[in-house]
Picture 1 (cartoon, rainbow, N blue to C red):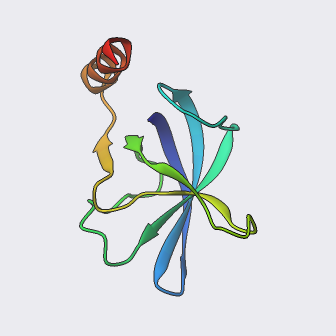
Picture 2: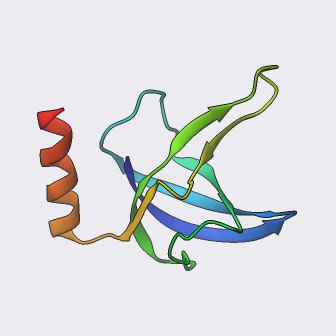
Length: 98
């Protein structure tokens, strides 16, 4: 879970790749760098992410069996909401209780 700002987007096959500036990580199992690529399947029911928009994103790190693919993936069960101070507070509180 992290707060990110969408810098750019690009269609790549059946997915959209977003370049994201990581503003604040809230809860993560693997380290995040200041800029990450977020991959979203075009079939995902997620709200569209717009360039310049800031969001709270709950995605997962996807590594294939061969360890040749390591990326952040936002799936249907993921979370993508426009960032607000209230949203950030709720995420921090939820992370503290886990």
